[in-house]
Amino acid sequence: MKLLRYGAPGMERPALLDAEGCIRDLGAIVPDIAPAQLSSAALDRLRAIEPSSLPKVGGTPRLGPPVAGIGKVLCIGLNYSDHAAEVGMPAPAEPIVFMKATTAVTGPGGPIVLPRGSAKLDWEVELCAVIGTKAQYVEEAKALSYVAGYCLGNDVSERAYQLEGTGQWTKGKSFDSFAPLGPWLVTTDEVPDPQRLGMWLDVNGERMQTGSTATMIFNVAQIVSYLSRYMTLLPGDVIMTGTPPGVGSGKKPPRYLKAGDSVVLGIEGLGAAKAKVVSWDKRPRE
View 1 (cartoon, one colour):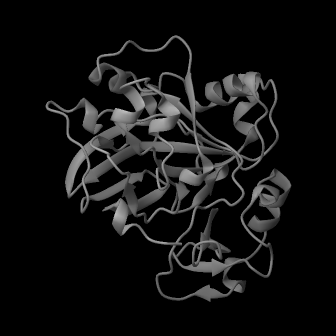
View 2 (spheres, rainbow, N blue to C red):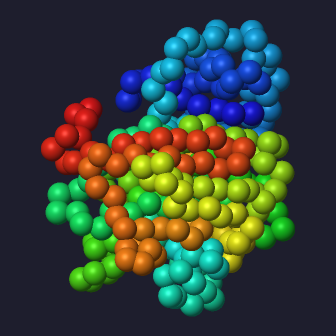
View 3 (cartoon, rainbow, N blue to C red):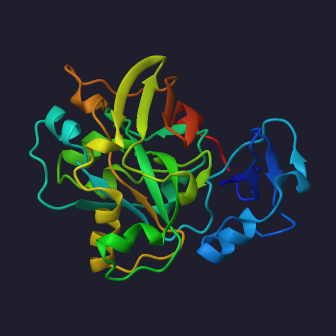
């Protein structure tokens, strides 16, 4: 099942994507795609609905983040062996954890806003796991049962603010628009193995990242289990699980995004997204 939210910012409506790729409105069934709709029982009730019985949404509406009410955006750094190698860093012995501000979350269509003074704006295609059940001290063998579904994400990063000066990862990754999510949340029954997904990212039509979740150092189950030791994971929490090689900072010479650039990315089975980079003074006023 593919769940999504469409409409103007702050006024999104819940919906699902049917087998023909049509958006079907769920507004008469649930108030939103939010934490309360992510439990196994709630998702089973939505699965039982015949999509053709739901109103069809015409046109190509704006898509918002596929989940409302996100409490935490947790991220794992240097989690692909081939990405760690490209930036010249050793594979970590345990997951590197940082957070993004929830104000960074936006829909899949962008725009990505270039912060004031930014000179090293980078891209990172990532598999995102969305928690569906409260998790504390979860065993690795059971960890995936706490996941409601997966979505596409872009861990947009400003490398100067992240790594130079005091080198604070959260600071360099939390600007508005730095966590585009979607187009939709794909429930776990449609992703039987999250460690076998191809992924890619293009900038201005040029392929930059090509990878697979198979090269993760710590897989999704290990990450969920690890995080649940240090904090309670709640329904609606999003975990960005790392990126494969091909980021701008790993190029020789490094290559970074500028206003006017186009970023297109996708993950097998989770859809694709396209966004434009805009300068701070051209950002949308919502």
